[in-house]
Image (cartoon, rainbow, N blue to C red; front, side, top):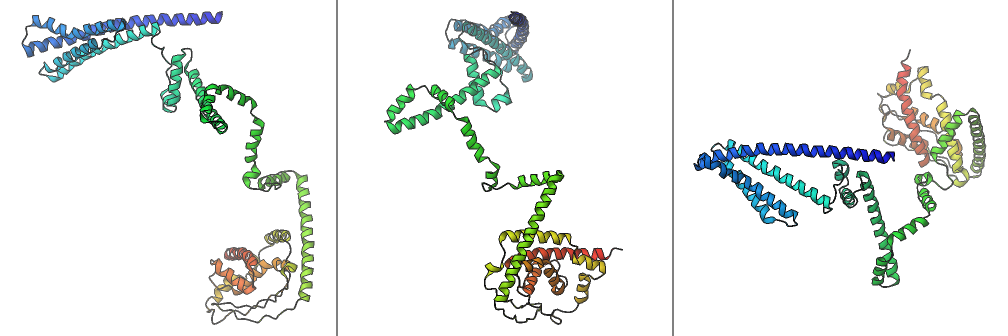
Length: 477
């Protein structure tokens, strides 16, 4: 009750304020129209006296009739329209009289600026009266129910610019149901749009299903008879949301997006576990123990592979490699004796990965040979400067001794040292920046295969970095 009284009191206050605003606007409009009419009549009278030479006493009633003729005919047309007629003839005649009065005010004065002023005032008075008449007519039609109520004021950019069709539908719904407000009509329009889209989809599928069983005419009759909203409601009640969610979640699984195997752990998860192990001392100790056990197993596997390779080497015939001469243009080296079966000498892929990781870690922890030589004063860069003046053709480097055939684990274990030693011995002066030529030189000198050549490229880069740091470290006090 209190809410109803408050609402009724608010409406009464609005109605009273509206009545006062209507009365105030009516008084102001009447005063404005009287002033405009007097100014327009003054212009008509002065124009008639100057252009037509009519006496002032006769010009005042004549131009008054011309100026007020359009208003009188327009009022007659409004009365006929209240009676249900369209009054097209009266409305056209009123507009013609107003246009004639405006044209006479413009042409009757020699000063066109003054004539334009009087013509504008005459047109302004007629338009104000016409607007007031049309407003009163719409109010009467709305009161009798022949005109829909006013719709909410929708936003220009938020509604009309972004969603013009949706806003137009909301406006139509607000006209049909005056109780809908601004946002309620927008929500109702969205609901109708979703319902129309759903009905179209259901009708398309239902028509195809029925047409596949019977003729198309029967399918059309079924669509006209069945309630599509009822079908949509029953489908919504039977929908398996859990199954659909699982179907989508399976496609969005991180393992599927990363392209991992069904039982494989993602790299990010493994890194998170390692980070957690670093934060937890006990887990870090367990991880270290596991790593030590893995290293011991890798060492045992390497020893077994080396023993197997030694047995194969003693049983297999070997050939003595022919010596060759290394020149600047070409480097010919002797190939080692072939092993009867590579499968007997090469370790497994898992062992190669573990052994490669262990060797890289040991090489990183071990101080570089170039740094040690720089501390002792023996710099390969300094030695290369002293020998740079002698042409390579005149003093070719001695031919390298052929490497003995050994197990893959033994050769890979000292590959970095052998690559650095070969570069220190055979690298020409000024070749620190050309990695490809150095890799080719090392591959020819050490008789490397394709896999060892890839690893040697990394060791060539480390040799170049050590050679670049040597002058700086050697020059320190």
